[in-house]
Length: 178
Figure 1 (cartoon, rainbow, N blue to C red):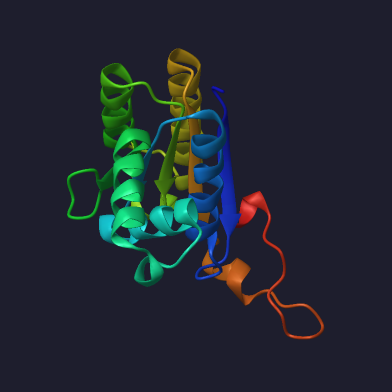
Figure 2: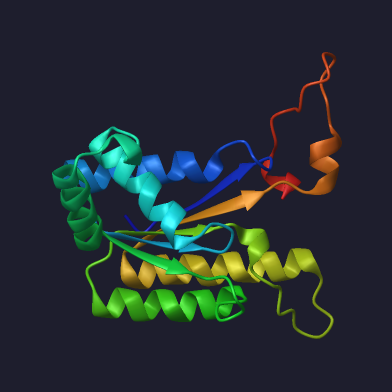
């Protein structure tokens, strides 16, 4: 608990899907509760994926009873926030929302997806790296104060997506590729 984990990966490789699956595990096994704050995907996509992982079936193969059970379980264990549309447009606003949710409800983790979806409200003279470092520090403060773990999904930058191995495959990204 109270950890800050940054997940780095190239675009369209399944980072969100993997994290939604991983977020299901402690909810199923330990009753944990979490929030998913999605900038790219709809709340419907997010709920559907979690329901499918919980029931271990595609939504189209669920019975009415399984669907109702999964929906109720999600309502008990997850808060899904659609962050598109400019309401939560930067990390300070994200953190303000996270503090509010953590004050109102038992919360074990938050998944914010993706970092590139949040604008950078840089201070005068502050470069992008300095902003990222300042925001990471603010997220760490949040995790320490609340005991809530923050998972932050991050896309690689354009240069990282150009790097290829000898066979022409994308190379594994590093944290500095964000």
